[in-house]
Length: 303
Image (cartoon, rainbow, N blue to C red; front, side, top):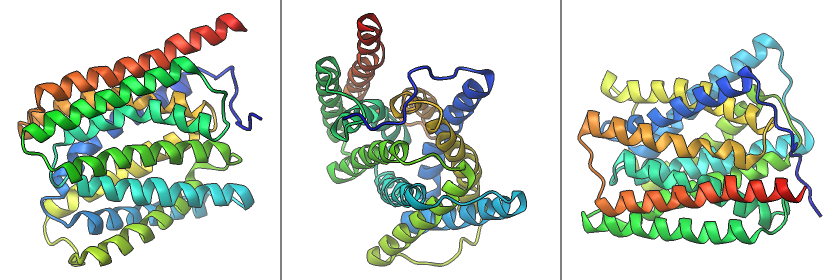
């Protein structure tokens, strides 16, 4: 039985497209900011500070505007989203980026639409689709090439695996959020930020990280930038768009962010992913294109 809240007639107003564009631009820049921030502050402690600050600001906005908090199934959806996306996802991504480039990390996140479609099928959000399944296999082959290319340059397999797992966790979190009843984006993110901060702080304690506040702007500016670009803008827009579009459509933002992330990494830090990484990235994007356009056209023709 299909249980999704998806509307086959997704709105494409200026407001929706503008939100999508801004979300893509903001997230495209966050991979480099995470990489730079890791050079000054321990990764899990940095993301904990980020989420605490973001949650506090969003809570103040919610109080000033008297925005209600999610309840019942919506609250459980916000908690799940926070634990998975802002907790496990960001913890794995931050830690992974201590040893791999920001551009490579962003390429792994190009698997989001594929994995989102797979989880949507497994969780009965949509029916089984052979074309999408084959596309997902091709996309996973692309991920294997990215692994091989980066390992040939001396990248840590463990850190590469952490970033891939982060992207997979983010895909699952998006589908679960879509299944939950819609709730205000601001307060959903307040709940998610605080839940994510708890997960990341526990991870920081287990990792034995130092919990001293940054003493320089080199430590503070990436955290504050990620609060603004990542949480106050991108995540809020993502949460709102999830109530308007299907989870797979929103996840296509992951196709745009690697382009900006790779470009910024090359210009600012001189990052140069391995040639196989680009081949693997192309396979991932090809698999996503089949998932979004070929399978989508077949459904339209059938209808």
